[in-house]
Image 1: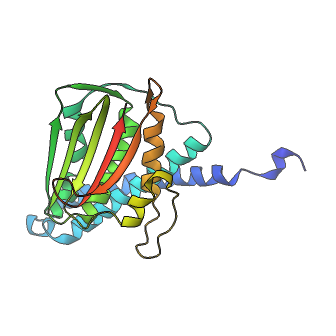
Image 2: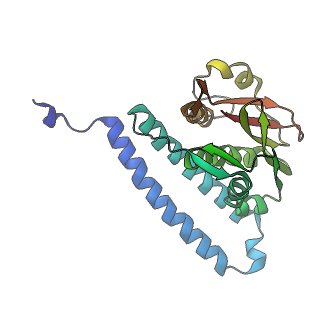
Image 3: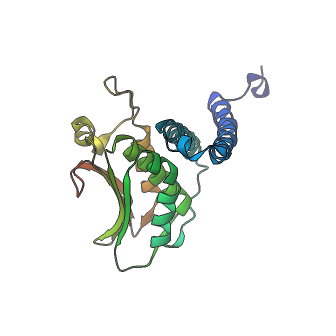
Length: 230
C-alpha cells in the first residue's frame, strides 16, 4: 500500500471537521442574534438568552483554540504583528462580549494604565486569547469584571480580573510546567491556559518571549489572568 492509499492523517481530519463546525456555529450565532432582535423586550431580558449567548461564545472560543493548536503543531500559525491602538483594542474585546455581560448583569470596565497609545503585537492571536479568558472570567464572575492594560518594565501586560472564586490552587502551583488535562473535580481541560501560553510565546523581542501568569486577588479579589508581551 502506497502513501496515497493510507488515507488522511487523523489530525487533519479533526482540523477540517473543526473548521466546518466553526462555520456552522457562526451561522447559528448570527441566527440567534437575529431571533433576539425580534423578541419583545421583556423576553430579551430573561436569563435564558444570556446563557445561550455565553455558551455559543464559549464553543466558538474552543473551536478557535483547537484550530490554533493544530496550526501550531504543523507550524502553520504565522505571527503578523503590527502597531495597534490600545484603547481601541480594549473596547473591542469588551464589545464582543457585550450581550453576555449584559445578560449576566456584570459591571465590566476597561482601563488603560499606560501612557503608550500603541503597542506592537498580533491583534488576531492576542484577541483570541483575551476573548477566551474573558469568557472564562464571565463564567465565574459574580458582579464585576476588569480588563486593563499596564506596563511592567519593558513588557506590556493585559490583565483580566474578576470577583469570582478565583483559580484553583493546583493551577497556580503548576503554571510554570502546566500540562493540560481533564480536572475531574471541575471538568476543566485547561486548554485555554495552554493555548494562551503558546500564543504568548510566539511574541518575541530582543530574546524575550511572551508569557502568561495566573493568580488570585487583584482589585476585584477573584481570578487574575495576565498576558505579558515583550
